[in-house]
Image (tube, rainbow, N blue to C red; front, side, top):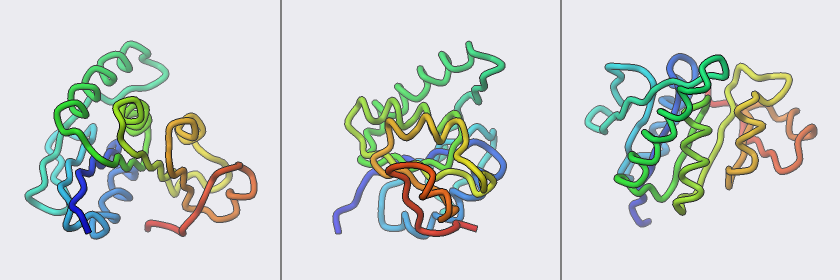
Length: 151
């Protein structure tokens, strides 16, 4: 199997924990983790971690900063695939990545058991693979897939 350049993106907290649990699937590839948590360490040890601004609807200007950061990171790293467990940084990453030619994967948070998150709903337009961790949600959303829970 050819080595792929993977960009793995998650906000802090539960999003980061869920992405970290997926790290064995990324072994053998060149990975860059991206998060909002200062001082975060990649689950695989020596893998680099980039820190970006956390953005929210309550601070719209933060999205401009986040978009600029993601454009710079993606243009420099040139990932083949971007995988994210959300939230805002992951959405921005797959938007920018899609425009720059990366394949994109959105995995909605385990916390969203009744419906897709707002970021997850928006991600549908940019994700090559749009996933939930709750199989029953697949019936509610066209093009949504589930391969089970991460945790």
